Image 1 (tube, rainbow, N blue to C red):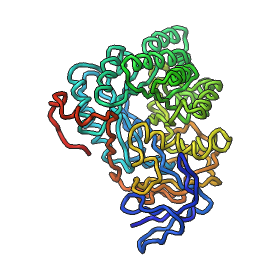
Image 2: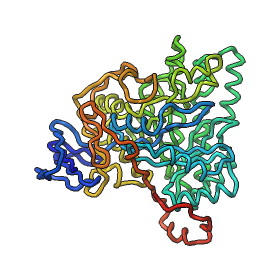
Image 3: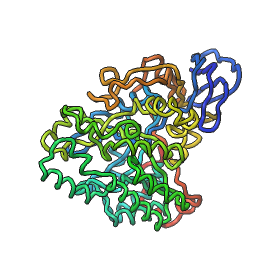
Image 4: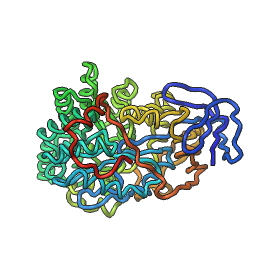
Length: 480
């Protein structure tokens, strides 16, 4: 079946114009005025609305085993919720346990993701180092379409990557034409501060931000940036939450270094007062790392988006329900870190950004979709409205509104960090691979309809590299 989106205003990262958009066989087939509808076409009336590239969330954690439990959202429910909010693709994370082979972890995550209803891809974390990791990184880039590797600078005694791992992995990424990404928090400082805070008798969620102050993030961001500079490799810093981290990115970019920054919808609108709430469920429901910050940091993040030193927005979607969060009832360090947001990211950023004049509609498209596609090398397949691009689109009603609530959201979690917020500007329709999957409040999805999206390496000489002795590892399967 074809889909003809008629009468809308097309908004991309670069242009705004009136046009119809025809989708056929999962691709955008035509863009223009008064397109004649094929006999089998479903007509979507976009009059008075915007037609934009579907959102891409570059930072999610579906079904993640973490801190003694497993995230309540799996790839089916999570990608379904994303479609309800206008997000048509995610980039999730394969996170090997220490000493777990990267390829073993990768295949495990691919199995979990087979139930996804929208397209997806993976960053792969480097949590330890030896020659097998060096080899597996090459196989992942060459055969499995992975072009980014994640490094947790936090979580000591678990998945933390020390400087030796960072240097080795950054160097390997440069050789392969891949990009390192970092969760920037000084894990040793966090570990010591957690002990200090607990020793002072502070055991509740209010201790979480006290043990992870902005300087802890700023130091780690600056360290990772300097290592990347020495290794001559680009760097992507995830969930930038504070001025100190943003300042480190801004300095590097002003010196010509290729550093990219991501911020979360939650960090843009929620402040650290949530951790002092008297209700444990409410306070613990906001525990994530880095934590929510004071309002001066929110203002800095908005300026980072406006000035181009932060390029993308994400959610770090990682759901834990109240019974899971209760594991830290008497010790905040045991509260599973994670919050939701994949369904709400785009509406919250439109409402807090576009409706207030902080962002233009074109800038909104850039920071919710196109910049991610460009940075992770899937543009214009994704993040674009061009003939031949994937037909991942959202019809956006700037006058529509809804009140966000855990009672009505599609996310598989009993808490919503945006609870009670009324947003103006919502998706009326979401089109995924040329099929209408969200229309006027109704979700119609197919389990397993999502595709794995290969992301090519950045190196111009990759083909020559692939033919070299560097690549003697056996191929388990071909791309896809």
